[in-house]
Image (cartoon, rainbow, N blue to C red):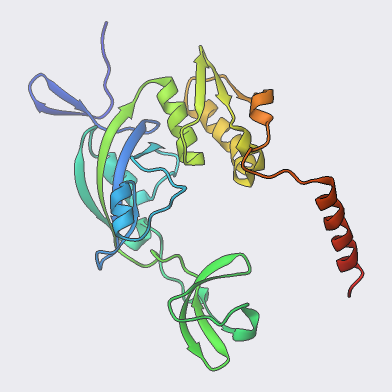
Length: 266
């Protein structure tokens, strides 16, 4: 059988190493830094803890990424495509291929009365659905920067291409972790994926907003023809948490009376 290679790298006669191509699923570990050496993102949990950016709900150990579908910044993807599985190195990326320029229009002066608590320099605050950093407090106003912290910076990534994934289940499970920060239980039957959805996802707005796009990526970038989301209920799973005390009829009555009293006070 004749083999055809795309973008091969020939190091020595008879030795061929495959570079990363569009559509490849790769697993990558990385640490992103600003010019001053401060770390803003990492797949290494211990590094995250040391640099006070640890997310207890996050997933560490590496991310599965599809090359060519804008799941990472352009400069990092360009560098990855020049290498092969197991490559480990560093790349510096200018703002235009990283997180963009720092925009002056995203820096605003706002009255202090618009905030529930007085802003302090360096504080991150939410305003009209956006997060901003307090740069300065001036009399009755505060100056906030609504640019993302990495905007305008040269970004450095230390990264390793852990693997190029070929197995269909590894690809789908990796995508689920990318979207939901946890590896979901997925069964593959030919070209059909059965995704077993945890019951707690019923209360997750992120899941409701994400599941269609996750299924679309699975169908578009793998050989899958169908994705089934399966919710399984059993009596055991639906039992109330024994640590949560059940309300008695008297307690429910007291709460109802209290609600009625509060509703009558304006």
